[in-house]
Structures are given as C-alpha cells and as structure tokens.
Length: 177
Image 1 (cartoon, helix red, strand yellow):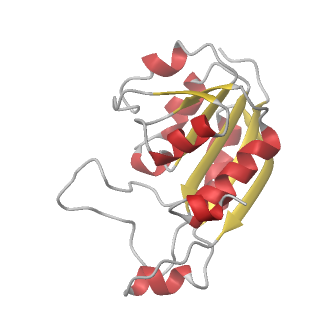
Image 2: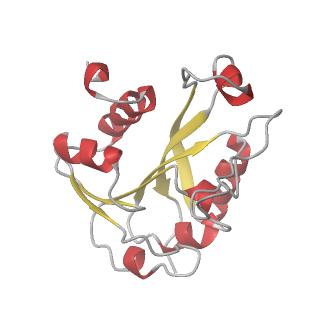
C-alpha cells in the first residue's frame, strides 16, 4: 500500500479515508499552508489549493471565495480559538476534518518558541461533533486511531495505548446563510 512512501502512519489512514469518500480529481481547499499531506493529495490525483497562512479566526475570505467541491482541515482546528466561524464560512457541501484527541493525563501541546504552533484545543470526539453539528454539518463517517512514535516521554507512551486522532467526513445539513 502507501505506507512505505509516507513519513507518518496517520498519512496512510487519512489518504485511505479521503479516497473512500472523495472522488479523484475533486477540487479541494486544504485549510492551512501547503504541507506534506497536501502534496500527497496532489500526487494521489486531487486538485488541491491551500490557504495562504492567514489567521482563520480573523479572516475567512479565502474560504468564502472557494468554488470547489471539498474542504479539508487536517490538524488545523486545534490551532483556532473558534473553529465554528471557519466551519460556518465553508461554501461547499463536503468536509473532511482531523483533530488530535485530548490525552487525559497530558496538557495540550504548546510550543514556547513558535506562537503559531500551539494547540488551543485538543478535542474529545463529542466536542468536535458538537461544533460541526452546530455549524450545519452532519458527521457521515468517522474513525479514531493511534499513532505511536519512537520518542521518550508521557505523550509518546500514551500514544501506544490511546487513540490520538479523530478523522471525520461530513456533509452540510443546512442551507448556508
């Protein structure tokens, strides 16, 4: 399969989930700047554009003007103060989201040297489902998975036993205002 070519197990799972729900050649807006996974989507046959790195809490202009079929937000919403505003701004009817799940015995990730690389949220699955539903999205399919890493520490230890990521495919349930 793909595993030998990808640097992270989560990329294998995420691509398989994307391919399960979205047809090849679909036009995708991937929230966030170009990253290794947006490049993987392109190589897999999707047409992908990324947002420019604007603060999506303050500026949803790039989202509102998107005319394609699908928006993806892979490990983006944990960095936002309010994902709700971004979710409401999405103009299309299909959405794929992944977020890190809260580790009960570890604090949310914080990078003291890069203010942009912080997790304001680490979700429980019901929390993401709630904000998606409130913003007019229905979770059609979801998967939780572990992603062990070869590091020392509490988080790496918990990743051996605890689901770390929550991945959902959603469709719009309400007419966008």
